[in-house]
View 1 (cartoon, rainbow, N blue to C red):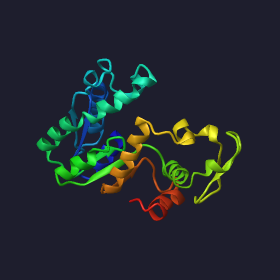
View 2 (view 1 turned 60 degrees about the vertical axis):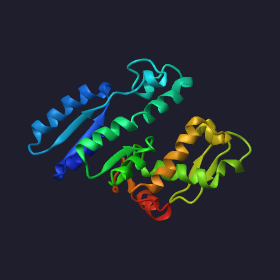
View 3 (view 1 turned 90 degrees about the vertical axis):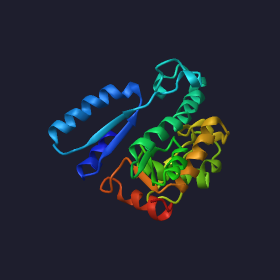
Length: 220
């Protein structure tokens, strides 16, 4: 997030990071160091309250690794959905030209449309990971093997990639609908309606998969 803001700012674009109190202190120090070393870079910081208690989480629980138990993870995603209104208040005040939001904020596409600005979806993973996940979802090659340890080939990729079912999450293997899978479906639908995507990668690292993502999966 901070690296991306720095990249935009180095090209003369004012970047504002919207975060929650837990992350604000560390970000403030880092932003000040960046500004000190790079004159002319403009990175702003806006803090909005994370509605942990409102969603049934302990006070101060602002990230998944702080959630006390896996049973409370759905409450964390409920809390993230409650960020929509405070985000709209910030956008109303800042009037940005673009909104970049993590894939797990599917409602951000509608928020951007409300303010008539493009929304870019941020993926923290690689092009390779996105391509493999898409092929597994589309072709379901794990159904062609008899055990959880028998290898299967993930089809329609630039290279032969083999996995076993044990390497997949349970909701993928069993195709069980959960609150999380519903969120993933919402994220995919939201991404299709968004302006485009930003992936945590670069062409020189995985050119073939960057091309596959754009040309075969038709993602921008």
